[in-house]
Length: 289
Image (cartoon, rainbow, N blue to C red):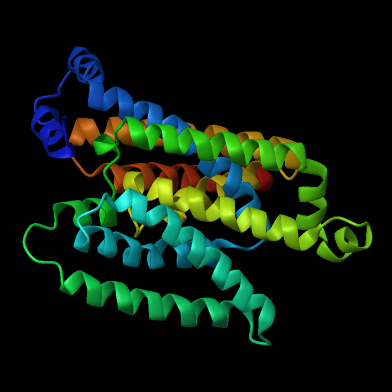
């Protein structure tokens, strides 16, 4: 199986469009493109609710705390992905439970739990002996190394998330805009809140291999924030966020192959540049109007 480091060697020789097409014929590149589309759609869909519900710090905390799951997987000589899924799921639910059961502000609870989990993760990482390539790949992202299992997991989370959110879209919108009114109207607010946290935690886990622990929050937040600049109508905002998420992921992979740089940072850089460009365009358009 080709890895990102194989692609680095190939990428150095890419100077024409034909050579880029040849690169796209490699199985690892095809898996990366498929993964980028799936994760881009998933990130855009969930990111829309994350930004509107001001859960950016929550997803940031889950992503960074996942270092514990990664380190445990490496120490136990298990596939880190299989450790990430249960760990991020339990972590997300426990953090939301702490927020609900304490009088502290949510950002304070998140900071406390994140700091503790990160400290544990760093200590566990220091115990790892020998080669740490798998750990480094998950820390900084390597979408070119995703396998068929990763694609299936991402697809399952995407399908499950789409069914959960789109089948209850009216309730989800009301819960996002005014939780108190949603409670009065009989919507099971707590059930939907915990359901969304479970979905968000699983999405963070499957996206970490692509963009890394350090950048996974940007993968969720930037496309949705960019879409919010372009439309305040929820349906259009949701569609634009999904389109931006998937498109920027594909462009990031192409940039990664062309310039032989890490895939995760390349994707986030493309998303950041799109945000800056659209921000300038919107502001100049408003001034011109």
